[in-house]
Image (tube, rainbow, N blue to C red; front, side):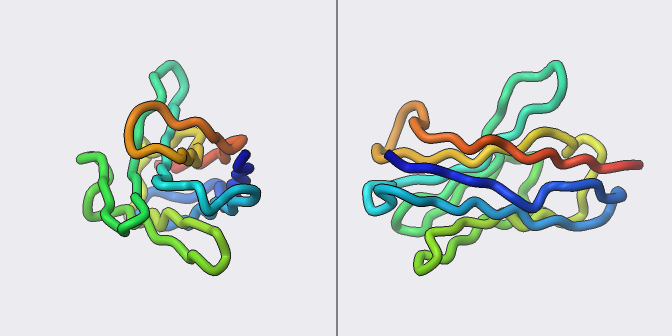
Length: 118
C-alpha cells in the first residue's frame, strides 16, 4: 500500500506560478511510476505529466515548456512546478503512483485545487 498526499494548490493570477507537492508513504520502494493528473469541471481527468523510476518524463502537449516534474527520492516526494499558468489550467490536480510500468494507476492522492484567474 502507498499513501499519497498532495499540497500546494491555491489561487493564482494568469501568468503566475505554483508548485505542487506529493508526499508518498508506505511501500514506496515498489513504485515504478508517478504521475500528475488534473480534472476540470465537466471534463474528464487527463494526465498532465509522469515520471518513471529511470527519471524519464512525459508531458501533455498543453503543459510542455511550462510545467516541470521533479522528485526528491530522499523525501519520497515529487513536485510539479507550474509556470506561466493559464485560466485553462484550473482544475483539481491529483498525484498518482503505481508499482507497474503500464496500465491504470493504483494509488491516488486526495487532490488539490488549482485556480487560475484571468
